[in-house]
Image (cartoon, rainbow, N blue to C red; front, side):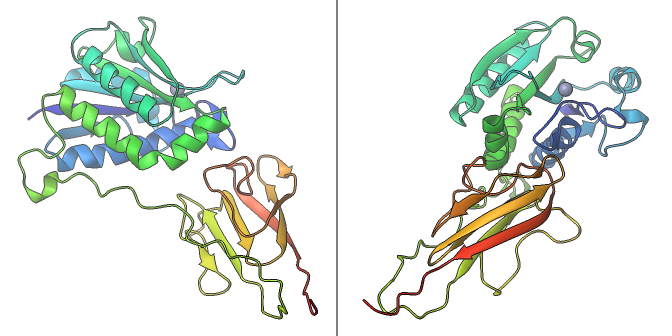
Length: 307
Ligand SMILES: [Zn+2]
């Protein structure tokens, strides 16, 4: 059976690169586990260097010898980049650009470019331990820059497309395909859920308008949850999963929001009328990606009694 080893970088006492309240170790663990599930359901044997965020198996000096001892056909390392200088984009690192490494890199570089990432191409990195000390073909992905807001918005909003792309690229590199031999388990993971906000923008009606104002809001916890109107439901994931972005708008007037985040304290106020934009993490929603600890909302609404 063809076997792949998935290696989410960092972990344990090493968070990796950090930015906008995100930690590389967490981001890449989530991606690797999701990719692994897709690969398993398509008939590939999958092993992981770690499946949690702690412990000795996060350390390369421990897992690289273990991987070599067990053996596998392909070793794939998951990372996110940081520059401190605003750099952006995706790159694949290889020890030498040939064989499986080249096939995989070419697929990933163009695939990530089509998702909106800058294509930084294939980098020859003979200095990286996981590339120069593994006995099998190996690649290392830098899944965008964690200290770049645009790359983070792609990481969040194109997440499902990205994990499917990685899984498909691994399978095709190994001569397999996403829909394998046609049995039910070979189906690709479901199409990405629509995370677009549901609210239909409401035209402000200012003619003899005595009606109530509807408030529409939507929370990003581990993903964007559905939009909620007033008290019909509640927003977020629950189970102690912090809310990292909050989108809010009103059917009439304007709402000004301000959130207090773990990373940056009180953020500047933003004002919305009858819509918001979850694809614009800078100005379309409240928050900076780190847990939101407090929210203040100010509604401004003028009732027009006479026209
Ligand atoms: Zn890294």
